[in-house]
Length: 399
Image (cartoon, rainbow, N blue to C red; front, side, top):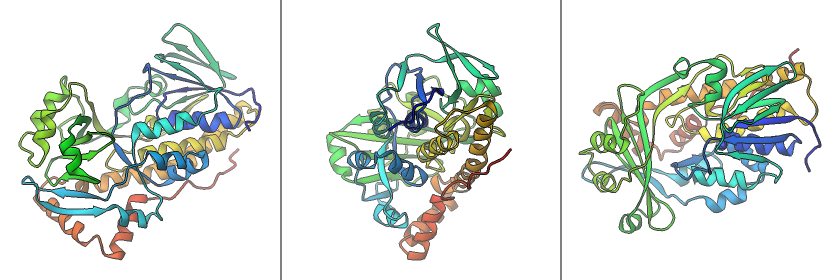
């Protein structure tokens, strides 16, 4: 049962970070309003390996049973060359064993749905609305919304993603904080019953240099497609579908079949990380990719978003907070969570060559590693490298 409180929080963004913050804070007694520029919850996104601290957060939320229902059974990631010949594989059972079985394969929209559906009914959503202005006073923060209304709150949480407008309004332009990692990524879904049946429970990846495509079956006759390729800068193309067909031409395997069926609208973005010296300013704090994007190279973005929300809610607590107490809670959140984020960001940069080899030497090294990964000691090492730091430092009562 929620603890009664007059503390009000406005959350910008109804993605995984924002929904998780809404869940934890509403159940702690905060009055929660969520604003989201989209008019409805998004349906695009790719499959993610869900493990790490977010798995623990999901367990605390009570949504693990639902996530298990929504999860996909994946036997292995299979790498194939341009001719479609198998060159290596990663067994999901072995990977899961290194994590104590605490691993689920989920589509990102399904994870958002599970969190959203678990929210208390009194969480207020303002769809199709975004924050235009932010004004701070010692005892409150006021947000001017795009529909002409204003919302006053004790705390504003910017959980509006890697291209956060909250961050831009408080801290400055995105280019100050974005570390581009040299890649563009895309995701889309096609209807192909024959390909869906052929894939079975495999996640098929091209074993290629500088560009790659992954294909995996989802519900019904659909196949989800994931792509990544090297690009000189973070600027996005005017026509993502045309860019994909150009950049991935001649990739081989099943790529031509998928590209022929690529829809006009696809998810497309640069692969990047966000690095900031400070995550809060007065009564505004950033959460998730707005301040801690780790990139798809590191993985665990969704997991870290959920666990970060849990930690923030833990520091904020259930009762009334003075301005000094609120500031202390936000500082403790940063102090405890930043080392975990920095660890995962560094891991993503270190393993970029594994994710997408830049040359033939790196491609051959990945193949050799894949053949050896069944060895128990190497399997444990691989699992530990993926998991990284297990959790935040203990809370400190700074003054």
